[in-house]
Length: 262
Image (cartoon, rainbow, N blue to C red):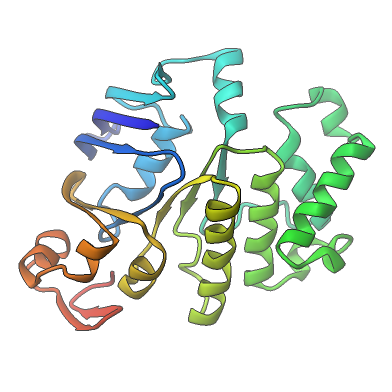
């Protein structure tokens, strides 16, 4: 279980990105984080895997406080937490296979990894990960030769190389069309259901939130302002909706609004 307790992040310029946020995530959940741009969604995810250090509060995973771990303990934490980014974060000039193999960096000798000297077992695992997301035939192409949807599949395959217990997905479908969005989230759902990998995913569109999230939290100006399960998000009142997205926001359909973007 993941426990976030009174988490606060204040950047050097004084921006309060997270303000006393507390919630728990049970093993095997598909938790979706909603809120407008700037609400703190990305900061929250990056604090959990310590890409960003929180200012105050605790992050407790499996009973261990990981808020201040360093060195080997931090590397061990990051091995267990896969990260998927909105803009893919691939090495464009490198092959798809090498990008996927980079997910093993926490497990191999750093000098060997710089020369991409990975074991036959790691290369086999990389191919299996590509097969899982349906692009094993792209393994030898440069990453920048792939479409956006294919590049995000590479990102998922790379995360799988870590043998993660949890995957953090930061707006993973924001740059994709609706069909591709469902494809990518379908792969994450499959990992969640078949491998019991906990997923924390920030999303903009409520139709996707309703379809994939087993539980949802809403952030506004760095504060946790809403929390509920899948049934609750489907029954969200207009008052609750405006409390997350602002008084000017209006729902015009299940998955869109006026005055802003979900």
